[in-house]
Length: 66
Image (tube, rainbow, N blue to C red; front, top):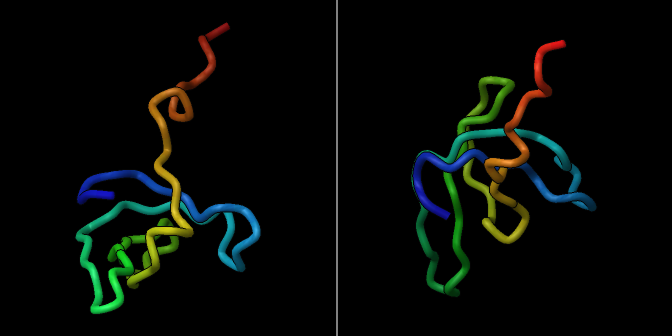
């Protein structure tokens, strides 16, 4: 994970599907990585990166105009 990535919370987590933008990343003393995320609902908080997945470019495509 790195700042600027668009992410969503993985399935099977209480916040599954939430979308956000990574602001910064840090490791704690136990070598667990955390990301500070600005979420679509306007909140900002730290979350373990193991429950996040990057939204790939193909996930962002809009259907063609008809």
